[in-house]
Image (cartoon, rainbow, N blue to C red; front, side):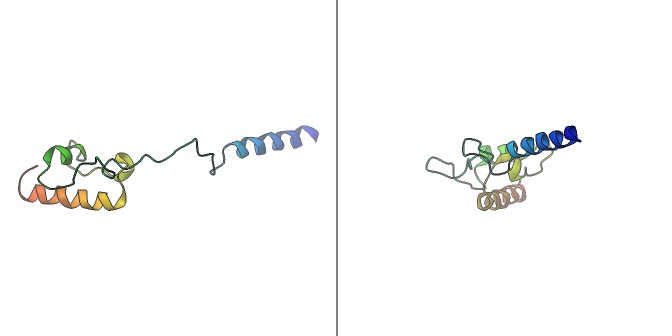
Length: 89
């Protein structure tokens, strides 16, 4: 009976260590590379920038992989689609 209680206590302690509300030293999200002072402008004519956010198959990479903010992701996808229409990509 005592061993069972000890095991439960140990597992509870392990779960307490793996809390969702971690200290600030553990950063889960990277900052957006397209936001900030020295960030490049998202434009359909800037093909070098757009190529970074398109896969080898020509699909637009999701923001969870590229860590782009939601607003910039929308601008980026619109620019990529415009560049495709004009046959720049």
